[in-house]
Length: 252
Image 1 (cartoon, rainbow, N blue to C red):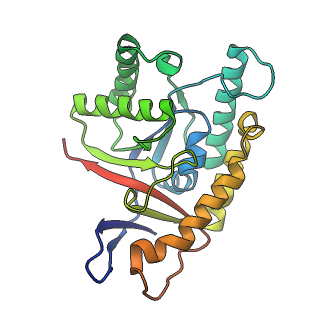
Image 2 (cartoon, rainbow, N blue to C red):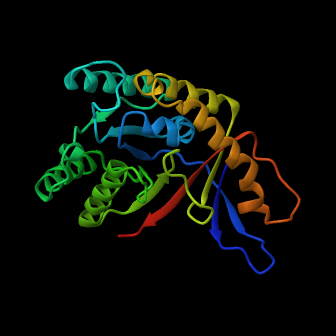
């Protein structure tokens, strides 16, 4: 069960939410700036959606930076792509599409144009009706860049569908930025954490397992009153773990 918060609180601080029906039979593309971002930001929800939909992950940057050890760029890229393949199997989503976008190293008008063509080709071929992407205001420069490249492409294509922006620990949503709430069962949370754990090249630098647990526990504790029942109302429980998203529907 998921919730869509679609109206700001009234003077009495009562928000307005609706329960979202189960999403089924949809083609979904889930874009990741880096190989570990999907598991961290959206792993639970994607694992849930994969039961009744086609979910294809798309990696924007196969980047070699931040890989533990002294590997060549080529070997580091191969390692990160292999980690994402393992993640996809754990989440039970389709095998990843690797774009290897060139704006990873230099953000120039010419390279942005070339990368948008790659993104456009994938979207035209796959014909998704739902797209996941990282927060467009993310502080990480390549996270933000990929989302903006995707949005430019969607605008040019006059694409119609639903967008889910996910958060990761580098740039979490403020209370007013998210409006889609996904409680995770213990099974889904286990899948999410196991998916994050395969990114060993990244965990040696930053403990994303601990950070993800902390963020989802925080959301579980705050969101019921913040977004569903209203401040000061009787508390309801959404369980121990909650992912949140910014939801947008594009009509054209």
